[in-house]
Image (cartoon, rainbow, N blue to C red; front, side, top):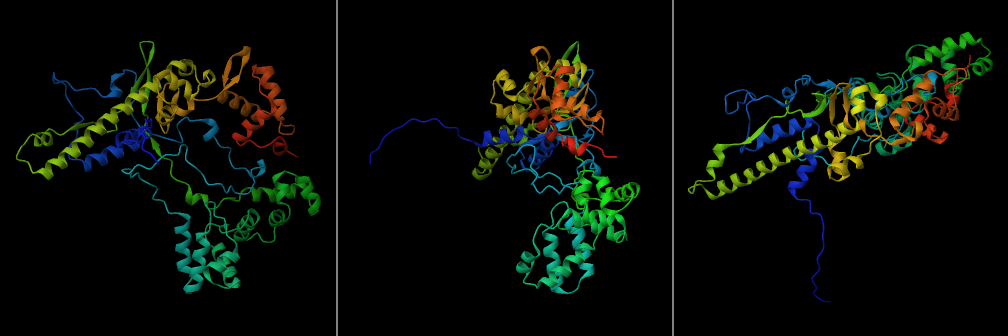
Length: 483
């Protein structure tokens, strides 16, 4: 063993740096809540009056008023905002379009994983959940303590779609109840609203719904019970032949099946569409695009002069003075980080504007490929900083309200050797599928050929398959209509 000196370099996450990173990835509405919470907890901070005046007594214009052409800062719904088509555009759930599949058991993740802020207390959805809805029915239906306990265990093992994801033997072992009791409790819960809840697979879910409609002896029940796989692949003639019925009778029965809900629990787990506030306005002034930060919703802060004067008093109690010093340091740190957040977001958006001016003038077909690392290199920051700066941020442009991430996409070999945005390629793939003959749908190889012949875009068949799956477009076989 010996003593030795060694110099090393390492990044230390100071509280100042941690707060800067956390604030950067907040949206405007999230930032507003954080700032208002800080206002309540730190007496050294105070809000600048909305009608602040300058030295000459004139009202100081807000950021949105600084640009003559800037639109009013009104929140919009995320459902009406134009966002990344490959992430947000979903095909309607159509049982006849090969989307009649088993519910997805994957755990959904957020667009960007991030640490929870210690001062974050964001509002949630007050709508009743599926669990609360079922538990209320259970308490009104059961008085036996054991039955109530088993029913609660069944409801607790339902996923967001309303399907039971635990084996009955597991529930019996966990509650110490007999298998017959668990089976009886399951039948009880399956009779609750919404119809089809607590089913163990898609077939049982649909059969429960048909039973609730009084359709136990209809052709639709027979189709669901015996020919569900053929419905998925649209083998209607084969179903008619197997059941000894006319094709018209089969199609009428299948129309009833199509009207059923394969995910009955989703109506109670679907969060209300959150409102968004554009973080920046991209407006054209004098022939040039300008980036104007939206500060209309976030309270403007300043240090309290009253408390600052307390620090200058020699007679002030030491404990009080230390408290004021700590709060003063926290306030200054917050003000610096808020200013830095604004500066980085504006710098990132200015780089985006320089690269996407054609898009701002002409629309989606002029969108250019752009990578996060390219913007990071241009403005001299780490790519992770740009990633946080565009997370959950929206820009109001002449083309609509867009998520900042929408402007970033990979490059694909386009006409005459130029690069084309991957988003544009996906839009073209989707358009070819929408205009195809449903009796002879296009193969992935054929779509790749059409892109090369008509649009000058060179992609292989495997890439088309990947793009199609990203957009949840069924395969050629699943899209084919069989009359």
